Length: 328
Image (cartoon, rainbow, N blue to C red; front, side, top):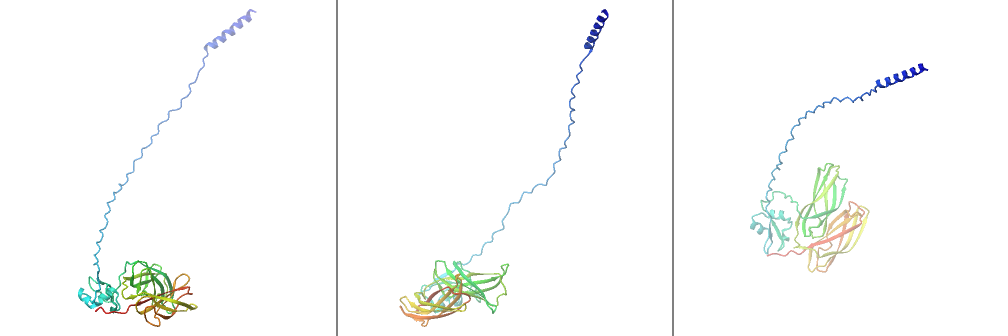
């Protein structure tokens, strides 16, 4: 009994000793290692060449245009003729005719304006100067022929609001680079073109190039018109047309003088159109009687050779001249 008691106390003492001597060792939580700072090299700036400052732009000097002499206009007075006018202004008669497109000096009229050439006379064949008078080209029709020619038909429309005369057109045939291969000139069939009126023309290129890409037609000359000796109170009546396919067309009718004066030098101008309103035929002819009194009539007959067709419609204009009166 006693021995058991001693053993129990021994076990108790041993337990207390173990409890008193024991420690709980807490291991410190390892701290993450402090990272060694990475040295980032600072890039050395690249030296760029300096951007040059553009110099201020100095425009090239504008050439001063040479002054063109202002044309001198003289109005014909009673008793004037080309010789007396030429002497007065110190120019030749030929220069006056060239500057004004005068074909027949006998048809000068009192009150008619004349351009007096300044800055020297025209040498040789005069070259018409392009005019700013606004005229319109329309109804162009192009036709090469078996003989190697090329025809361009069309008409000039006077959209200027003023009368003009001596109208001339210029046509050009062009290649694919728009280089000029051939040039031709022609006058409008009507000598006098009132405001709003139109007149046909026919350009002929002789020995034209075998091929061309395009073409153009422009007004090359137009002079201010003076109705003066022209007589416009004429009318075509009872006109009948008949055609033979694409070759020939016939027009018959009457010319009536609806004015109050005699008329001489009457001409009948016919323009024929196809369905696209292109000019396919032109003819200028005289009626049976070339002097018509007021109210009088005279028949006319025109035979027109066609370059195209068929003919869809036509247009006829009649003009004449007043009898020449002496200015003396």
